[in-house]
Image: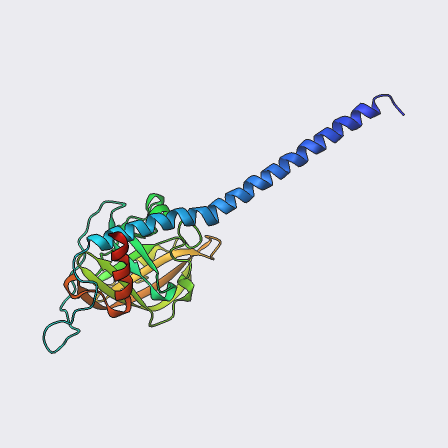
Length: 253
């Protein structure tokens, strides 16, 4: 056997050992990144979102129990007041309640859909879209599996589900109609009448957008709703979310 065979084997063994250790280290780093992305970002964002919700509800005016409208039509509060525009990304505009996602589900609604907004506060309004209560398309976006996973259950909505939006003006109730899967390039879902270029809106739409599938981003899932009712802040929240609004205000004190 050549005299250099022993040292050569030693070098190969060392290279293999180092390569193996590097692969193990890379695997651990990747695992830690996945844990951080799918677990820690949700905890961190959820804490920030609940603080924002509690602060907004605490500072909002009006009772936390429903108050009937005056007159014979006790459910008629007149034409909806359109929420005031702020045009300042990151500003909390209101709170979104979706009972289908859980009896305690409430998330802040902020202006803007950049990572700075969605990664921290969850649900962001497309700045080119309408405000809550306006005729046209009020469109919002949110993550499914990270940073609070605010729209993780978007695929579970069924026709007739209610989505409640609270602003300083009052409460808007939207009724879910249908969803569809589109490519990320299909931005016509954000038009005043979704997917209908040039059409003049006559209804008040809510369009929610998120990534699809749940652990990917090759597509977008779009959930369409239309406004059913409105209550001014002075009338209190709809009965379906009154207990949650009351509990949330108590947390903010």
